[in-house]
Image (tube, rainbow, N blue to C red; front, side, top):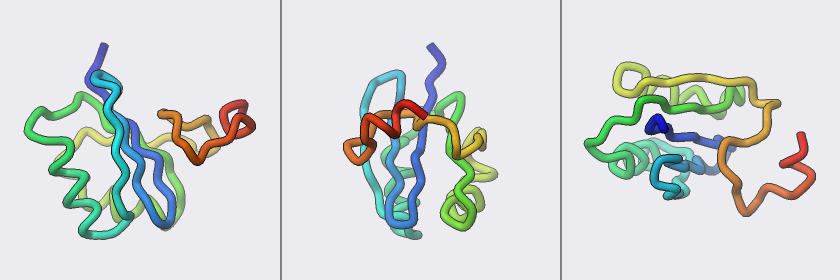
Length: 94
């Protein structure tokens, strides 16, 4: 399995999940949250970091990590990459 991190981006938070370890964490969608996310990722670089295009909400993450991480932007209308407590069963059926 590729070492992949999925990030669900909202106006307030970044919900990250490292699929190879099944570890998840939540960070504020702010400059400090982006720094905390980078520390959470650690020195072991993932093969992919997948996130949804969410208009203005994803722009800071994309700028911050563009030259650092192997980013893959996907359509935000697809189901989330990692289950989140805020996702309802209806969200998962999309």
